[in-house]
Image (cartoon, rainbow, N blue to C red):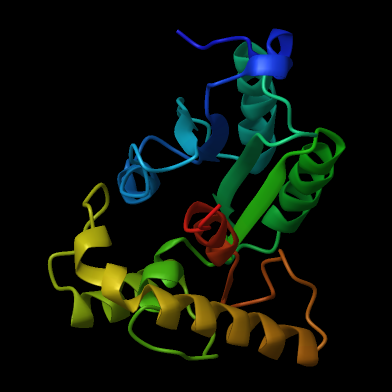
Length: 204
């Protein structure tokens, strides 16, 4: 049972919560992030369950979960919403609405264009070529042939984590230098997954 830490701030022993919400019913993100849990961590990871497949509904569901857990996002708890931009231009409106709603509620939106698998691919290679979801997965399978949704890819790529973070930041810089608006369908390829990972691997 979750402990209401707001009533025990003067002597609280419970760990801070990092809440992560993701689209759909696949467990890819959950399986990946669960690998960062452990007794030696100063946080616990919780996920937002559900089958929401659009960014706005996902953010609304996250807001409900934040309230249910009585998280303090202005202190040390953190809530992330992870969603894919895909390649359909009409999704930009949904993404913008979701981002604004998230920020109004101190939730951090994490966008990948076209999909979260780009983050896994960046562990192996850097490229600025525009890709769709299937192309990202096909390229990933060249390095990790058994990749499929819901698999736990972490053990095979963890030793390349620093390379992935560096590649993601390099890609972000490239998109900004080309005057692309981040967190949109047009900013392809791009992923902000490194922001969550950097928080999870902090020493303090």
